[in-house]
Image (cartoon, rainbow, N blue to C red; front, side):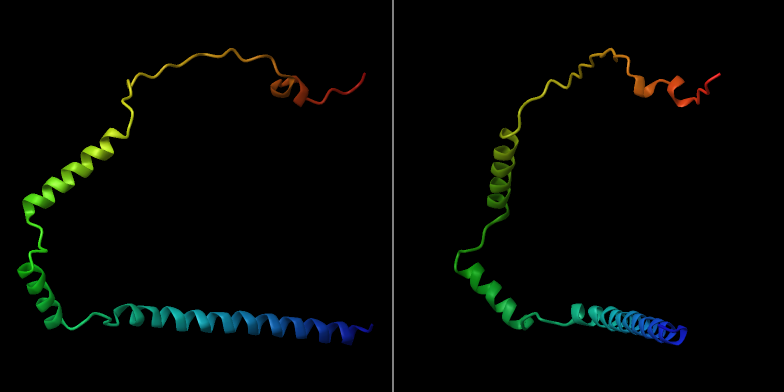
Length: 115
């Protein structure tokens, strides 16, 4: 291989690498600019239809009053509170004596030159 061939391969790899990075950046710019537009799109139904559905729910006695909602919420809260154990809130700390370990000894970190 001559220097010219190595130089050609080097330039080819460099140009391909730069083009891949540049293309990825262009794609990311496109994605970042268009994601907010996609999130703001209105996929909701017509408001008048929603209000009509609410009126039919209230008139069909499928509506749950505030008192019933509070009772259901309290029952769920009590159910989940019973699942936890009562703790004494006392912390016990036992001291453990460390054994001697040569790995933590400072004398082995020094260089001992023979006399």
